[in-house]
Length: 184
Image (tube, rainbow, N blue to C red; front, side, top):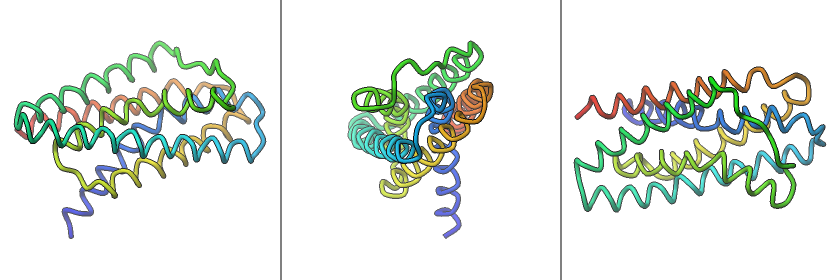
């Protein structure tokens, strides 16, 4: 039971780190003065993508783990470190700008762009055999809530928090990547 709670806490922290992209971009998109119904739909769409992409990554990761064993485990840890460093550097540069309206194709592109990193994390989690349902529910719900929060906050304030939220997310992923590498 205790290991399930530990796994859940780890997944929630990872989901939080991955959802920070959606939060920070949502801050910028919140400047579009979206209606509450649009904000709700955007959050659901991002949440759905944050469920599908790690699921796809987990399936791929399990296949790689079965085929390549320990080497795949090292690759997963390195992948998380690289992803975390990239997010952190992106946050430092402050290059997170919303250039597409979150409607129609723009919404799909937005949801896909902020969930691509969850494919990579899903790949790592698949290699390590994480619980699939618990993972995708944590990732999806967290991403939806963070997206809603970013959009609503973006309606009220400038995008200053976006830079720091991306750096926080990158730091969390970097820490988990190091933890995975050091456990071997």
